[in-house]
Length: 547
Image (tube, rainbow, N blue to C red; front, top):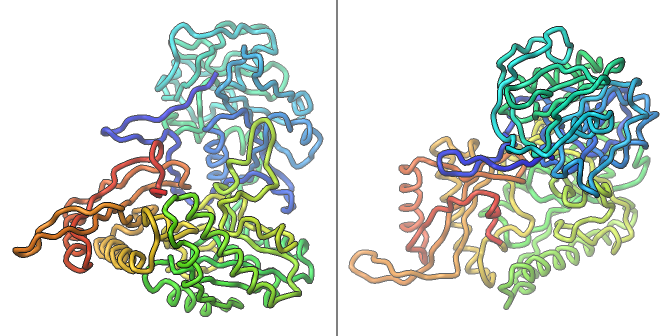
């Protein structure tokens, strides 16, 4: 059993899944449209660390895929699979519904690395004793002994720190196993099945607390599996462009641009593949940042994209009139977007495909260790519902990547730095940063607040250190004093977080001098605001956006 949790650092919650900032790694779910000669298969048992395994492998410039554990047989005879990694799991191997991965098709043919639950599963299957731990084995530990001649531990010395997270433990090895490493509390911290390249560890090498974890994965992926470290942003871009050419042929594509990194990188990949047959539409929903419609539209034109801008602000404001419930507002924004986009698309009757900047966090909720990826587009996607309504096929060049990975590809493609470095911005825009009913007046007020907030971060050199920042207009008023007069005006909240992909996030501990100066500027410059607060909630339990 493999139980992951967060760690309290300085009174704040920091996810164990740590940010990776080094260049050259990618994360993916599937690559059916990309021809590859070799890849690592990661079989997922439901661990939240599974994504980090993939990130670590990608950091080594080796391509990998994550698939549910029950899809193992699908890949058993695939010659491109050079190695298999079994993930941890929230299950115990003794649970009645525990994943029971069949890897017989791989054993002896390709190397296998089983992590935590995976290690316990293989041990139990080989006849070794796996028992519930009387004392929970969670946190830092040290490998007291290591078989130094084993290729998995090349360059790793005894005493190295590892991260444990399990409730079951392999208490006794058997004749089919060679013990490779142990701790004072875990006699079988790592083992190898005799006469085959199948390795197992009861700790998590993918977690940054395992000091030499990346080296262990390097040993497995590069040296044991023999993979070439040639998976780079350039290789992804080149292979994706070629795959798009084959997929789309002479067809035409319509794509909704948002001004963000995802849709922009998707547009560049499609443009490289099909040129002028890509038609881009940029809709001003009246919920963008100050001057964003004009500025972004100009940036896109400089990129050579075939783009049409649509001013639909009044339609969105009308649709939002009288609505204060967050879900109602999202649906109204989504429905109006579909109507506007559909009307514009009807001017392009030759189009057969709908391009989308979907990335992995958009689809992760549809992925299950008991099912696999869903073909259904999530309702909250900014163009959700369009494919069925418009009878268009969908092309999603980025659905395999996290946000940081998209940025690396964008950098490789020469994307405008102003767009490349832009913080993520929600599809409903300021509509979900205005709590309560949305009006044109409230939007104008929040745009001014947001502009001062973002500009203040830039002035102090903090913008690029923040993953996402925004301002929220609160549905409350408070008493204030300006000059000798009593005021009763709006309160706004400032939000800034650090994250890798938005799935977890921590609040930014910004300098108090910066916050004080920005707060003062907002109150002095924006009529109608007399109080500024700073949100210090992390995700989880809070979300990044307030609605």
